[in-house]
Amino acid sequence: MKKISEKILQPIKVYHIYAKDECLYNNLSEKQFDNVWKTLRGMVGLMKTDYSLDDLSYEEVELTRQVNEEHSY
Image (cartoon, rainbow, N blue to C red):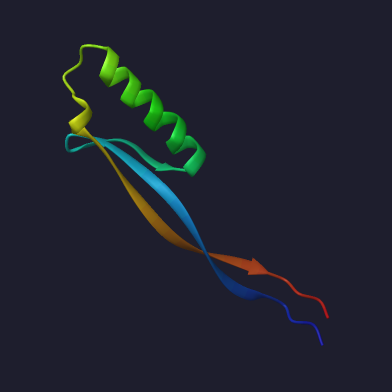
């Protein structure tokens, strides 16, 4: 007997980065987030901008994605 497909719930994390109340980046992977977050904090800390380090924030969101997996027995 062959089982055609089974739905598996697989959680993934994505990140959104904000400056004040404005979303600058959304749905970043962890690797992308790490790079962008370090770069933004460095830029705001070194350059004269309308933002301070306190204006930067991020949100970590865990999404559940369905993956179809086929099994053969």
